Image (cartoon, rainbow, N blue to C red):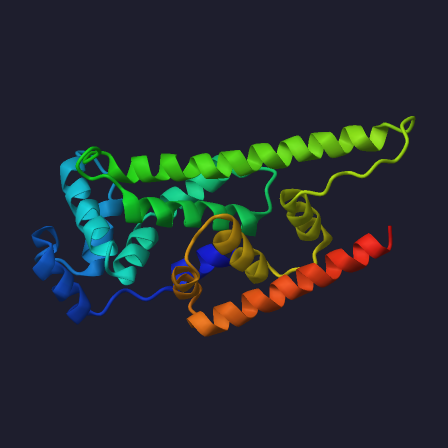
Length: 232
């Protein structure tokens, strides 16, 4: 899962950057990023849930204007991200599932209603984002069932299958036409609505490089689909 590997390798923010955050959010005072992450990941009893929610709320407020704070929050949520993928992504391509979940989390981090849901923030974020993975898994299962039934039906005449964008995307992914990074670029930004600038930073590449890579992937997708249709 390329996207998760990239998240794991992201270096912590510089001390100077973290001090700027702490000046804006007193809950981060007297900490550095690693100490904050250790507190968030500590599951030994007694667990100070209020303290964790204070730290997460601080990162969410910062993430509204600071991309690195949002990325830092994703890094802190990595154990939960992996757990949700294990629980809900069976049957999905691992890279696709990771891109769906990370894109969903990013959107929810940017719009999380702290006034209405100030408690159990990590759980709320992960459960909300997991719904997108479940929806993708169910769509994949429905398509697999449909395709299986279609293969078994030898008595009906061939008809136009009515190719939808979702079906085309499924067929191209299964054909292995695109690399894992190309799948992430198209799926997360075109299908899931994650801004290209945000995804580029998560992947550790520049915006223009991501834009060109996505364009090349889309041309590759279009060429493959045109050739495959001509061959029918």
